[in-house]
Length: 345
Ligand SMILES: Nc1ncnc2c1ncn2[C@@H]1O[C@H](COP(=O)(O)OP(=O)(O)O)[C@@H](O)[C@H]1O
Ligand SMILES: [Mg+2]
Image 1 (tube, protein in one colour):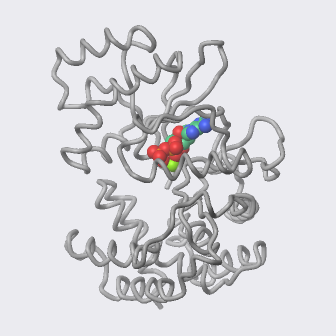
Image 2: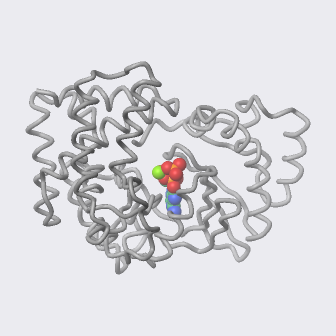
Image 3: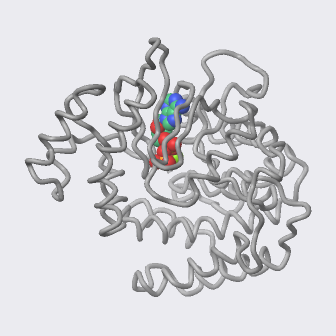
């Protein structure tokens, strides 16, 4: 789900800011940061789609940045885009070391993200320098470009992501919270798909929705906490970043950022991988064979079931399409849904 890069000045973009407030923030932030705060158009859209809560978070963001910059003695540098929800910027610490600061919107997942990265200790994941759950803030090692920008082909990306996931699945299951009855990932996605399909005015065919729900029901019935691993949850190529120097735990040359960190089967993460590149499927003469090929490739690299990967991939394609539309990313959501329709033969 990596997208066009566009960065806007917050003072021009956030209608909820009164001019006097903006001036106050600049003064307060002037102690530790550049004069204005920037963030991506994608981030603004996500916050706006969240209504009052999203706008309140945008309005509170300068305060979070000021508090965290002060507490951790940070100087804020360039803002990084590529994500959809969080504020992410290059920073320097008090002793001049480069780092990356992330401040996430108020979602419960952030604590799971931190727990997962801490437990991984750099294996398959970015290294964490500091975190503060009151402000949803994390200070991380600075990484290089995403796999999206450096990989020459889908096949190469699929191979790298499989190798990275083998590493991340070694995070001890105790790092994730227990799954309450009826709240496994597949059950959550059944609710999301059925609710959003109605709320968004039936944005894809009933056939596509029904097949996604049927696959999700099969995955829900098969859920087994005992054999689950801590899944990344969103291991797309935009969340895979190059490590600046070779190290143990990053044999593929990349590590993940931005995990959701919940218990599920390995095939779930691999289903997210094959959800990627919807535009490639849309341009294909035979999208089913092409996608089956990616699922087989991942199954061979990891020793899991290719049909289960296929089913998760289908559920993720439809749920992500609906979710993106709901969060204000209409065009990207449409591409996912259209790629799902192309798979109905
Ligand atoms: N440690 C890091 N080093 C370099 N760039 C990073 C780092 N963490 C995040 N980024 C950049 O910021 C973008 C958004 O970060 P991410 O954590 O994925 O946010 P979101 O939760 O909004 O998806 C990434 O796509 C990447 O370009
Ligand atoms: Mg991300």
